[in-house]
Length: 142
Image (tube, rainbow, N blue to C red):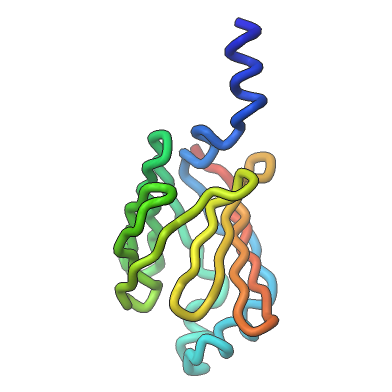
């Protein structure tokens, strides 16, 4: 039993991401979305959406699904360290290699850099573009 506890201490991110999370708060939403080039009406519509994020993690394999108001669903499947095809919120497809750095899932989207990590019982996603950092925090539901 002690060995199992030690293993979990050595690799806390093994299954840490699996779960269902609901949007709780965000910082710098407007400025970040403007930097992405989204029009004002789209920015207004998306503000404080109760996004539900569901993550299934099986070792290095992830299925990351985000459900938006109005029934829009975006799913990205990836394996840490392997190139894959992903999709942006706007539906644009691109190729990326997702990495794991210090327990954080790290990806470079076409216009911004994103990290995701579990802090306590929350999913913290941080996206950066041109010196503007957007932070979205979601609480674990399951």
